[in-house]
Image 1 (cartoon, helix red, strand yellow):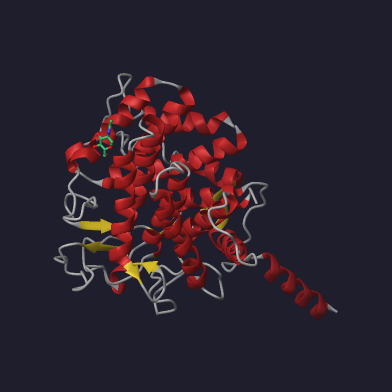
Image 2: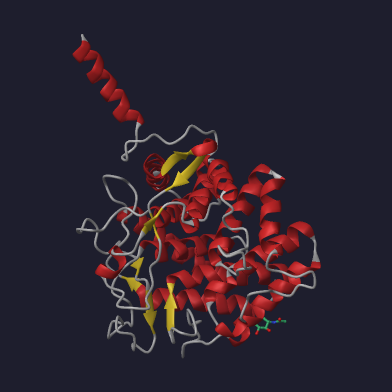
Length: 394
Ligand SMILES: *[C@@H]1O[C@H](CO)[C@@H](O)[C@H](O)[C@H]1NC(C)=O
């Protein structure tokens, strides 16, 4: 009898608990739970750990997630937190502290998206002034011979998947708000996507390599295409979020919209095909699934869930027998059960996010798999909040 009871209990326990052996905290909304947890840790508040204002894309991405949550819930605490973060950076005259235009990094532009959103939501002129300053960087930002934005001034002639998210949704939000008929700007955005896609596409899978060097000078550059050697999940994740966010702004009258839709419609089935059959989520190095030291990574996986579910909800792609939705939902459940764990005070932690991935070095397999895995990395938390908002809108 004892034996029977304990084995029945074991079955129950293994049904309830995730792969890490701990159940996620109970919640009616993991979007609000994870956002509130990050807010109570003071993350994404516009200040660095030493208290100085920062123009951080991590803060910008988290603020984008809070914007979505504000749109969904109408809870002003999210809007107030975005405002607090941007007010740490933007003076009352619209000047932007801690921002260097001539550093020419696309990463620093992401935060401009929050400025455009705040200008719209609060009507305060200083946010438009600040956004205009960041927008002006794009006029002189260094470009490849074909016209692609360099990821950073320190990475000449390189376009990265990450940069598509850092620059383009802001470029689109700004153009949509202040120059909606600027055809040159919409053409320019479409060009960026076409360049990154045409040089970085892994034709056998439909996934994209992390980046490419148009002059093929980087140590990692493929001698024919200029592409880097591996498919890194978060780079594809940023790109997948860029595509879906761009469509929110792109005028139906501009032909570039068809380009974005077509790129998105090619990417989604490639993502679904690349999901790990056991966990339903995605490998850190997507080009080497299952290889020793590779692992299921939380931030890139959450980005894919967000991109697929949002695109389905907004009708950017037609599901085939519900398979895209099923794939995203299965991945979401795995992420929830594996990476979300209880923290003190009724809050939650989010685990399993790789701290960094860069093409500053060799860009090879051993580089990607040897980076630190972090709990409560804002890139992962922001992506999971975005994914949760979509999951909870099903
Ligand atoms: C339209 O966008 C282009 C490309 O970014 C830019 O050079 C131009 O100044 C913009 N036009 C206006 C009226 O601002």
